[in-house]
Length: 323
Image: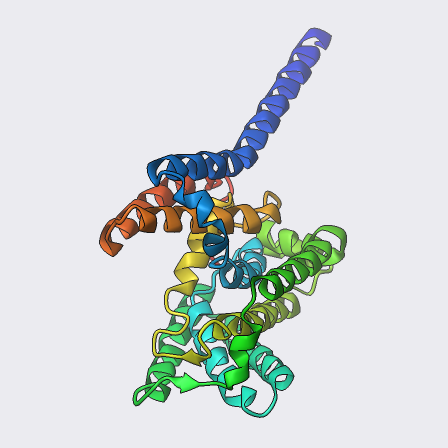
C-alpha cells in the first residue's frame, strides 16, 4: 500500500514538473518569436527594419494603449469587437473639442470612450447578452455614425493638435498607462478578481466577488482607455476620416494572441502578453509592408500566424464559449 502511494506521489510530481516546463516554454515562445521575426525581416529587408526603427515604433502607441483595455476584458473571459468604433467616435469628439481646449479634448475623448463602454457593459451585464454579440452590434452602430459624420469631409481638429505629435510624448503616455495597468493587475485585488472571473464566474461569486459590477466596470474602463488612445491617434494628422479606428479591434485581438494571451482568459494570463504581442504584431506588419506584399497577401500571412498561435495557446482543458 505504501509503495503504491509513493509511486503515485512520484508520478504526480513528475506530471507537475512536466506541466511547469510546458508552461514556461509557452510563455517564452512569443518572446522567441519576436526576436526571430525581427531578425528575419531585418535580413530580408537588408537592414531597413533597424534603420527605420523609429518609424516602426511610432505605429505601436495606439495599439498598445487600446490593447490594455481589451486585455482586461479577455482576462475575465469576454471579447470586445467595438474598439475601432470607440476610437473613431472618441477621435471625432477630441477633434471637435480641441478647438476650445486641448486638455478638455482629452477628457472628452476619455468620457466618450467610457460612455460607449458603459453602453456595452449594460447590455452585457444587465441584459445578459454575450459580449461578442453586444460589441459586434456596437461596432456596426457607431461605425455607421462615424461614416455619417464624415460623409462630406473629414472632421478637423485644432491646428495645435499636430504640435503634440512627438514620439517622446506618445512614448511617455504609453509607458504611464502601461505602468498603472501593470501595478493594478499584478499587485492589487483588481487582477486577482479578473483572473478569478475568467477561470470560473460561479466560483468567483461564491468567493464574494461582485462579478456583475466588476464586468461592467471593466467595459467602462476599456472604453475610457481607448478614448485616451484616440488623442494619440488624432495628433498624427489632426483630423478624422470615415476610416478612423477601422480594424483596430482585429489588430488588438491578433496582437494579444501573438503575445500568448489565452483565448479563455483565467489564471494563465500574463500582463507581458500586451507588450510582447503588440511589438510582435507591429514588427510583423511593418516587415511585410517593407517587403512590398499586397494587403491581401499580408492578411493571409497574418491569418496563418494567428491560427498557429491560437492552436498553441488555446487551453483545451478549460476553454469554453466566450462569455
